[in-house]
Image (cartoon, rainbow, N blue to C red; front, side, top):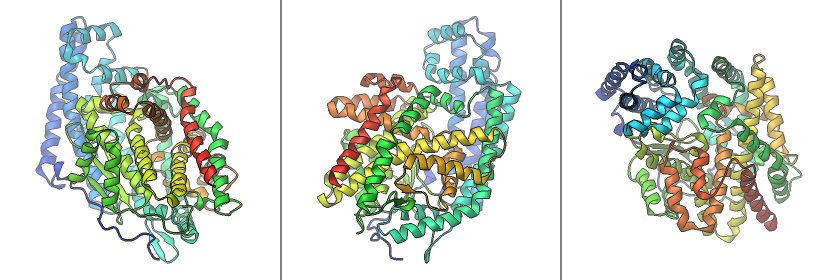
Length: 598
């Protein structure tokens, strides 16, 4: 099969992980494990001191500061080790040695870290007055207030020290299920006509201008995924059952509640957002796909037409250099600092963009720790969506470098804000793509932007609703692969609407969504972030110059602010149900523009 795009003039880069460790045999691996053990030993020497000093605010504050500082130091060493193992393994899931190293190192990290479980338990034995007095008496302790806020939130759901130790010690064993999931999909071979494709290549081919190629990729995926559904259904059921058992012990009422707590968001607010999006399905996805079917001259779209380009000629391709320049120019719209920070990822070998066999599909930005720089991972194919994915992940990367100034513990951003910079960067890059496109391409670009919005908001909420229904049914017993397929078709059918035909075999497509296994109930964060960013973009349009410093402050705050606190300077209140309609209406206006061009 002829490639739809010309070979890129500039080849995407490979990253160099030597800033972390030179190799798996690097002596620093052992040295950092030992340094972490030393910090943990010093921390554990403080066990019991906080309770003994609870009547002395100054002494308690000093001990609290010392304990959390040691905990952060150990976390930085262990975080760097874990990041190195994961980063190296994700570029070649077929490398048994790399996978084994990751698993072995994860067990060693757990062995070192587990004895620290007493720390948060002891902090939560202090009452509010004692803790507040200690923070008031010691400035060093006071800086940990945002981290302590998250620790205190977990208090009603903590277990005994023995059970917390057990939970921590079994984590590496439980991690073998996501590993099995990753290795299964990395080994996937999709037969599409005469070609054999990886999962990433097959998913990319679903956006090909030629329907025959899209159909071949979709039908090849149907076969490849169906063959692995029994294994992947077992993985998903096991992960869900394990989660349900821990949730029951911790006293969480609903399967998503632990994720909401980690995100520092009320479950009712997430439900309101999901309900608002579902109520908007007819105005958004149903309406758009009916328009797209008309443009393509079809009574109904086949599911492989969902992301099809509107023109049958090959759309504009981008080599790596063109993509880099376009993204950096887009970042410069927020100011030189944003472009400079993003530029570091290209100037340094911090990006692995080259698609190749064995490399896992998808894209991510890994923050490592605050004292180390992030890395960006993607599979570059030279399409418009790859340019936007590059912008998305670099948005994460810039966010991570800004938040790093807070230190490792305070830099960690809840998911309610973690997608802000990435989706914002995507939006800026699309605006530039549209502004620089020839007029003949503008309708197609507008369609692509709408589809990206539908994929981020509507599709992710459909995924979220699928997860809720699956976990609810899993609580009553194992959910069969057939039933998983039924739930998936019902939710996807409701979200896509009557203009999209869910072809035979599509019922297996839940099985490649990695977040279901790696991070249950993560997916709603994409919709949350997209709708939040829509509100921010509306605010920026009123005063671009005044917006930038406020936006920088939001990103640099890391995890020190809740999402409600972070948005207050912009005059936005996400607790108001009307907040969510800002984003859905913005997407609806794009569909209005598209309809005017049809």
